[in-house]
Length: 231
Image 1 (cartoon, rainbow, N blue to C red):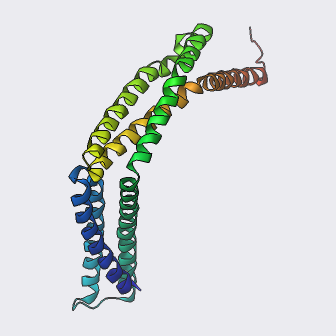
Image 2 (cartoon, rainbow, N blue to C red; image 1 turned 45 degrees about the vertical axis):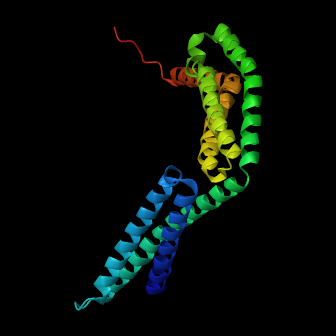
Image 3 (spheres, rainbow, N blue to C red; image 1 turned 180 degrees about the vertical axis):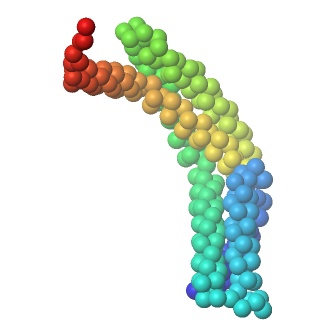
């Protein structure tokens, strides 16, 4: 079983390396940096597994316990290598899908950014209202979020501008990294927007926890026995 896993993983790593070279040519070096890291990690695990196999195949007699340990190590290492490859292949598939649907992906980012921009003033007013009711400290964590969101959306728009430029020149694959940048910026903006949209709930939860804590302290105080005073 360990020998079969080793051979299958070796084939998988070789295929992944070939696919990485193809993706690098398609989408550029910057788009596949994480894939380079994943492949290097898989190759490291594979080499460690081969090292364990060499210990099995050398001329030094092994005990049954050592044989089991070497085979177990091979299976664990090949499993790690295969998982790294699988994650890489899933990302490759996403890149190819994105290349085939660049326009649709860019449109989704634009739509999402427009929705956040439309609703951001209302969320910001909610921060102001809560600050007036509970004090600035209650919303201090969220005060930078509106500006952060605007900055992230501006970054997404800049990336989409590059996408439009590259698409107009017929460079579809080269547009993919910029779509990814825009998507990531939108995701971060959306996360911050959700945080300030739910800030009322966060404040209510914080006050409820504080009240519960105070109540528990009061119960502890009441339950303490009264000690007699000695004069």
